[in-house]
Length: 162
Image (cartoon, rainbow, N blue to C red; front, side, top):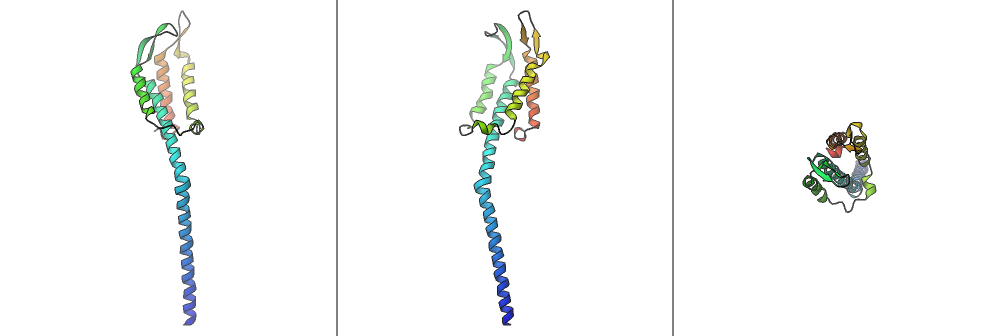
């Protein structure tokens, strides 16, 4: 009987050691998550929220109704986005805290480049320009329609825009 009690104590010690080791592993994993991965995930979420706000502001401005206004730079009346609408679009962006976001963090994907490329593609489209006696005039309605379609299509590439 004495042998059985000794063997039982060794088995109990192994069980206790196993539980302690497993507990230590779980505690270490939780600590790593809480102190490393959770702050990184939270930071990425903040950055993506800001990028979504910028994107939404840009898209909103292109969706503003066009109103004819005299543009002194080109010395003619052109259709431009309604000023009040544009101001309303930017209000939501002002409510997003971006003071602690660095510009490099905003470039962790190609959203800014894709927005720029989309707008440049719309601008360079041959149907966007009308020849006039004075030169070229932009068909603003066609440009804005192209920009809206192009910007909307970017939602497929960036899950945080949905």
